[in-house]
Length: 345
Image (tube, rainbow, N blue to C red):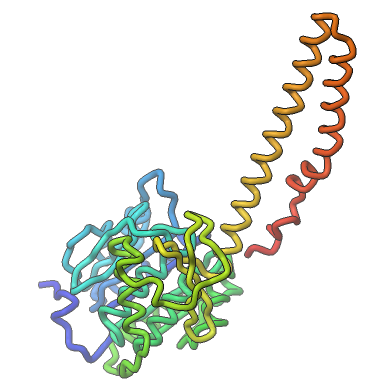
């Protein structure tokens, strides 16, 4: 009979949480393939996926693994020898021995978000958790991995030089005292060793209240009710998603932001979101000015038909002046280096 996570002795690691983004399907497939079918742990996987279509990741992983691989279901009891895969547009959380799926606020521009899973696992299972950050852009997973270490768990990261996209593991290694950095195959071996071992660190966290607030926000989406304003000092920035007030959260070397409605950002994801907002604003401005030019040209044509030559010349002159002034804006919009896209990873 398969054991539930809470049936296990507290002497050992029984919860494995894995996060990946760009390039993650291949890395996850290899990692899951290397885990034995008798693994005495439950494995949880978050891959950044678009919200508009269902994921087939569970089928891909099932073809590679002797473990049971399923799409996580809300309220499902956690059992060993099972891989639970996050579904599209839902955060995957662990709470009181069961799985919770929520549509809470996005974190690091993602739903499902790696940080949400990692933080909830750290809160629920503390030293029994192994956190793994694989390939991906930006830095989702860093704050969550820090929470796992803060609660006595283990932190593993893919070797950035072996990752298809190095940014996520690089960030984790730079900000978290990770226990192991290596290839995907080596990480799988370390997971097996940790699950089969009997060593645990003690929980010495001073962030329990913070984690509870953030878990509540991810679960229920009620930032003010959960106490979001108690998480840190009021920030000088506004939320690019909802334009709400944000607080700055400092976790050791990690600085994050969360708004009063619940959206959460790392510094990297915040600048990426701000860049997107600026980009959209510039294109909106470009469109509006081009519409003005077209309207002026149409007004000039109508004036010509009415034999109002002076009026037509005035409209055409305005259109030409507007086009001349629009040129620098168009060049800015089309500049591939304006937002630093070439260094985003």
